[in-house]
Amino acid sequence: MAMVLSAAALVMEFPLPDEVESAPVFDPGSSRP
Amino acid sequence: VSALDYTASDGVGLVAAIRAGRVSAREITDAALAQIGKRGPTVNAFTTVLPAQARADANRVDAARAAGRDPGPLAGLPFAAKDLFDIAGVTTRAGSKINAERPPAARDAAAVAALRRAGAVLVGALNMDEYAYGFTTENSHYGPTRNPHDPTRVAGGSSGGSGAAVGAGLVPLTLGSDTNGSVRVPAALCGAFGLKPTYGRVSRVGTALFAGSFDHVGAIGRSVRDVTAAFDVIQGPDREDPACSARPAEPCLPVLGQGIDGLRIAVLDGHFARGGEPEAFAAVAAAAAALGVSRRATIPEAHRARAAAMVITACEGALAHLPDLRTRPGDFDPLTRDRFLAGALVPGVVYQQAQRFRAWYRARVAELFREVDVLLAPATPCPAPRIGQEKMVLDGVEVLTRPNLGVYTQPLSFIGLPVLSVPVGRVGSLPLGVQIIGSPFHEADVLRVGALLEAKGVAAAAVTP
Image (cartoon, rainbow over all chains, first blue to last red; front, top):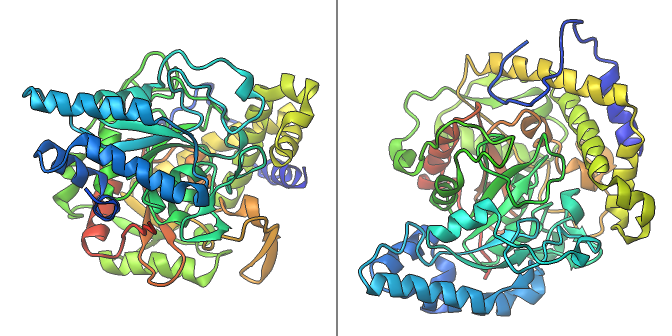
């Protein structure tokens, strides 16, 4: 649990630009955004 | 053919001998079964052995050849599949006690079927971490798979049986799956070549998925040409797998010998150059020197990509097993259960943020691949740890052993990049691997680099028969 919590904190603290959206279907060839 | 001859040759070499009539497929299959009987109990790589089916398949290959028909590009090549690939007539356990209650599979998984159609001979199913959630194959239901080069140490995971079977000379080729490093880690620790193709390049139909947006089918083998020959047979579109790309297959075996002219290669620094033992970085340096590579490159936020991969994996994995986690948690492997339970408690906003980060990170890496074609990095931060080892010291810091074996693999599978792990020759020492990383759908690039390292003698499989 501690590992996942630490990972979650690391993810949440990153200042992503507002316009970034997650891809609904993962496509490794896409370079957007 | 003697057991010594069998374990001395790679798979493609055995196929060439069979197709030329120097040895029969049945003789090779019998040698494989003998080697499994000799070394199998020590390494505990197999969960199921299929001698009758294997001998029948081998006899069919020999009959085809005797009748003048083409026995297939992989004629008589013995292989085995991680126990999350369906095998018709066999229950797919995925390393679990729970799935052992299920009925036998009705048909072979797509990758297994493709290899068998090409003439390869399936000899059995291989041990793994429960539901593929782990890097060590210390499976409490079916026992730990032991490293073929030191049985007190782990084989890596989650495709530990797939790595150990090659490293112990049981079979020259195995199928594995890779979500966060599960092909590359055991390949590296067992001294084998491990190919994790691009996400969506190989059909996963008939496999037990772990975390669907990460799951890849891959191959572990005794040589670059072994994993390439297998890849060429299993790659390509499959409408039954919604994640499988419509991009047509691009055979790589014909280009293996092209060398590296025209490829821009760099060694990854930053996250990939810290937090490991010096010998892991020395292996990368040896590969870079052999290739004449001095350029360095950085993937930004790779440590955070690893964190995001952990979050998404835990959530997707937990969702798949939620009913069983609620009703029968005691039937899970304790190591795996705790990871799934953690995933079930992650807030949705964290999962969504991890997926947004994934899109951002993928775009940054795509920018890097406009400047380079191939990247090099360690496969693991250290050689195989001891079985049961809870902690280890890396770069002066005490860390948990099991999750940290994937520290260099997770940021790459996170965005589906094709990677070949090659075993770097270390005489008298436990094996280590170097990751050769390409841009999406450029498996040919990484295989060409791997083939050159093998030709130069820098990369070589370690087999302890």
